Image (cartoon, rainbow, N blue to C red):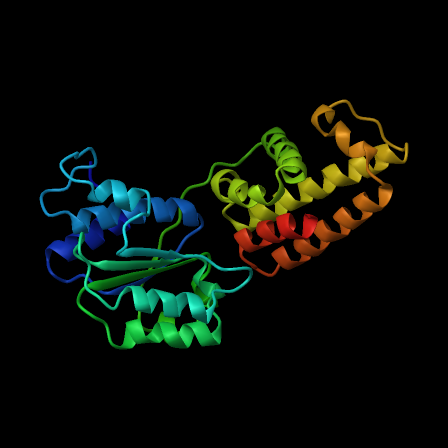
Length: 279
């Protein structure tokens, strides 16, 4: 079944009309869902025959889904920025024409994290486009993208309808997350990507989520000092064996991240910092 997303349907039409551009900026409230549908779009435009989502004639779609094809590069920030070295590596990988696909394809998630050095290297793709290279910049806010990149891309807004979560849902998600944060170690970064970000893709959702986490740690702190009693923290009882200073540090960390979240900092960066600085 072809991609039902209106934006990608229009891009497929442009492809069949030989009018497809070479660089696109996608603003979205759900980067992971956009990436999922973008990968489906890339399958369609690289297919040698009529595309079907359940086709088993070749291995191309499988390789694109698993992000294991050499002609597809997906770049994510390393820490808080996308580094110059990441873009240089991308350029080197695309010196030769693709073998198994029609295009060399790159996708840059959290594209606002391109710094001046990496963005300048990236402009080579945009100023001197090659016929067989197509690229996508994905961001939560296109206004945070460097102007020199934004001006060279076709821009689309690809937002998804988000159902309002009940307070109970948010509390349950937050309780489960705190447990994962405390026992999962650095693997919680993958938990952020796979489980949390699809549910809190908007900044307002992130702020509510962080406030709930702050509330949980505050209650644990009050339980620790004997000023609060609750019966719904069974899975977090092990934390009460830790020194009070631990809760003070964790409360300060979440408060600081909440302040940063007010200023439209990327959701993934905020959550990943929560994991890294919790260690």
